[in-house]
Length: 317
Image 1 (tube, rainbow, N blue to C red):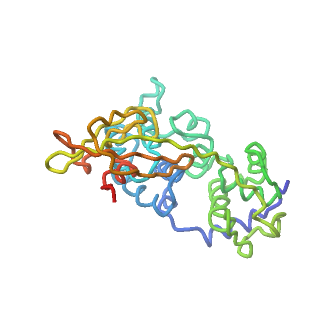
Image 2: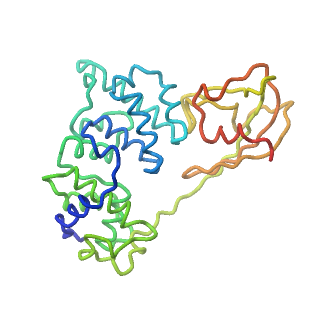
Image 3: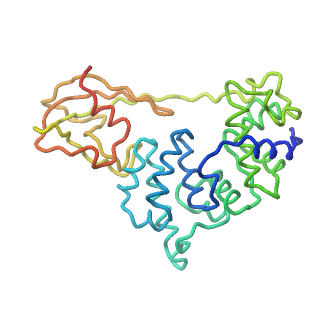
């Protein structure tokens, strides 16, 4: 297993070539945490916009804890995977509890071990925040770092445990924050999944997979699931749609949208078409049934998912 990539070369490359991202201009652990949670399932280009909105409205854990979860969801809409927003709100509440009640008195904990006790924080996020904000010597492991490790070590299917061992072996402990970001930046911008830029790689001299990088690692086979749903798209006399807030479970939990379910009662409604929507591991096929209602709700007043916005704009065309 290759553990000999040049730390000085990678750090020098990162200092010169890193992207200018707003969360890289702060040591505020809360703002760094917001960026890490956003970027779990949101592209960087889109994440900047949402991060700036969240930081402006919720500059501290207390400001989010004092807000209603619906407001957090409303700001989050369009970023996808809304369970992250709900867990982030729950995290802010836990952080702001008094220490004697199991909280942290309003400040994020500083160590990865303590961060792991918070809702929605896994090993990667805990290590990223602790190392970047507080300099803790702990290695990050994410998809980008797994890919760098696989190519450096010429491994087809490295396990996460093997990646962890490698990441800890190569960790630059004197500046773990910059080191972790440098490895992730390398995977995101140079050692990319489909078109790696090997000639630009600052650690190509130690890479065992440089001649055939696309072989390492082999992509994981994802089993996609199909979900068939029925949706009642009803409008009142003013053209406002009937919207309901969904329960606390499921992919759209807490969000607002037209009534939708696998076994929805569509008696008296007219089928006007099917809306298709793709999630990371699931394909949704939604039958849209049209009708009227007594009183609708202004969609801009509530948190609406991208799927629901697609349904609301659908007219059978």
